[in-house]
Structures are given as structure tokens and as C-alpha cells.
Length: 434
Image (tube, rainbow, N blue to C red; front, side, top):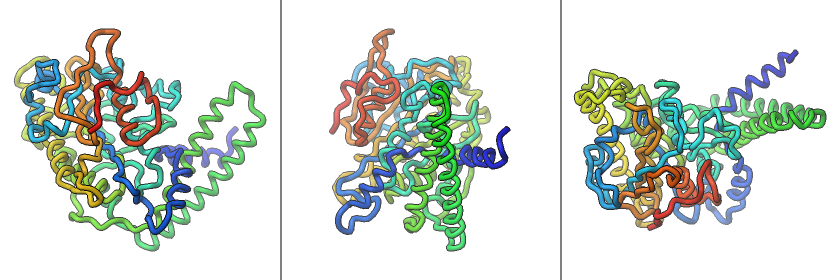
């Protein structure tokens, strides 16, 4: 029967296991400390790449999102018109998906390409695009990634971010919490308490690791896989503790805006985008995700019906019009975010922040009304690619291109040296760098 001590250790690991997995952190730290001269932690000689992923829970109404043209030249549809000022800054991708079914139960595959139940069978544990990029960033920034959104929503919401050990990264809920995380330093007493906590947790991990290694000598081969997963979870927590220790004494940047109030996801959306832009501009992070889930209050836009119920419009035109109104607002705020990134010039170069920020907008749901997860609505802006067109992949069965091919291209553009991601079959043909 397990002892109270072992139960406490498992509880600690379970609680800490939600931390972001950063297996490359130790080597990154060595590299950072070995950098010559007065170069500070987080600074680099070249302009770093950033990645921002925005996803919603119910997709985009196809009739208002997709152009009738299936060529690189296309017209701006009702849901693309808010992006009219950025036609040269983004690419629209048609016929990309993960080849999965499941409706709401497959929305969480948006950035992974694999259902969470099947993640353990994957060589990379079903890690999401953003977390794979965060591994590459390591300790170069205070926050390897920021996941922002809400816990609420149908079947848990979008659930976009997943670690290499198959654990969902819980979202930061609301602009106030995000603001404080980015810009408010702890008082001396709180810092000391945190330091003591980190030392205690490190001591617990050392003991657990010793016990696990001792057990490794006595188990049979069939149990080795389970132990490997356990050790991997311990290492994730250990690396997270190392990251917290490293940045504990580094002051946070000064905020250039007042602390916001939480008003609900719909009215918070502009503030969240502003804070993401600030987080990237101050190099507090280089990877961020924004989940727009079922807690998006349509009533704040004057829509009396719920967002989820409208996604099941049943081809009723009145409901479709209201759904498009909600989705148009989301695109408008995305366009405003692109405006913001484009207006920020980087001191080292004449480029805008958008030029170095891979900005992905889409969903794991293709058609909310019919519960299909194919032909996902995907837009990519900025990031150093040539844009201004529609990229149309084959739609015929047997010729379809995995969405993860695009993700592999993004990872390589981000600087990750890898030849595969999830179910990719290669990089995406026709995607050219600027």
C-alpha cells in the first residue's frame, strides 16, 4: 500500500506536471552563460523569431469565410474584409487539416494533429506547435510561452497547448492576471517565500529521482515504458524549477499601460491582444497562444443567442447572420493585432514586429454546424514569408496535405532544427520565405 509520503510526492508531481516542458533548457542555459561580453540574458545578435497562435472553438462559417475562387487570386469574403489593409501581410490556406473526425472532441487537435487520447503513441507525445517552439526558446525569455484563454467552454474549450508528456497547459485567464504576470514584481517577502518553495520542491524531486533510479534496477521490461514516462514527467518539473530560479532575480519590464480590469472574454479581447504585443515587444516571451472558447459572450456584441448555439445554425439565415457577426468581430480584433505588430519597429533593424512574428489564426473545427474537422480555416500572417495570396492544396481523397506540413515549415522558420512534426510528411510546398 502506498505510503503517505509517496502519495504526497505524486500529488506534488501531478500539480507541477502542468508546467511547460522545456527539455532543451539546460543546454540553452549553458549557451546563454557562455555568450561573450556584456550581452544580457534574453538578448541575441540577430532578430529572434516569434510565434503567436490564435484559435477559436467553433471554427468559421464556411459560406462567409472561404472565397469562391480556388486559385491564388481571391476576393475578400465577409469574414476576410476586416483584413483588407493586410492583404499583402497574410496567406489564406485552403484544404489543410489533420484528417481527423470527432467534431467538438477533435477541436483540441488544432496545434497538435493528434487526439489527446492517442498522444502517447506519438514519438513526440503529441506536443503542440507552440510548446515545441517554446522548447527551442528555453531560458532565453522569462516565459518560454504564454497560454491565454479560459477553462470554460464545450468539452473544456479549445485546449490548444499540450506538453511533450501529454499534459494540457492551463491558460492564463483574463488581462489582469496576464498583466500582473508580465509586469508586477513580487515584494521581497514573497520572493523569499518563493525561493524557499523552489528549494523544497527541488529537494523533493531529488529524492523522487533517486527512488525512481533505484526502482529501475528491479523492474521487468514490460514496466520500463511506464517508468520512462514517470521519469520524463519528473524532468519536466525539474526543468521548470530551474527556469523559475534563473529568472527570479531579474526585474520585470515596466508596463506602458495601466493595469486592466477583467470584463469577460469578448470585451477583454482587445486588451489581451495588446498585452501579447507588449509581451513580445519586451521579449518577455517569444511564443503565445490565445484560446477563444465558448465563454466568448455574444451578448456583449448585442447578440442575444449564445455563441455555441449559433454555431449550430441549422441553415437558418437569421442565426447565420448573428454567427457571422460574432466571427467578424474576432477577425476585426485579429486585424487590429496585426496593425499593432506592424506599427512596432524593432531597434536592431528596420523591420516591424510583424515581420519577425509568425502569426497563426484558425481553429480545429472546420464547420461547427455539421461537426466536421476538415478544411480548417487557416490564416498565417507575418513571420518572414511571402504573402498576399491563397494557398490551395489538393482536395481529392488520397492527395490531401497534412496541416502539420505547414507547422513543420513554421518550426523551421522559427529556427527549430527538425525534419518532422506530428503527422507531417514534409514541409509545405509553395510556401516561400521573403
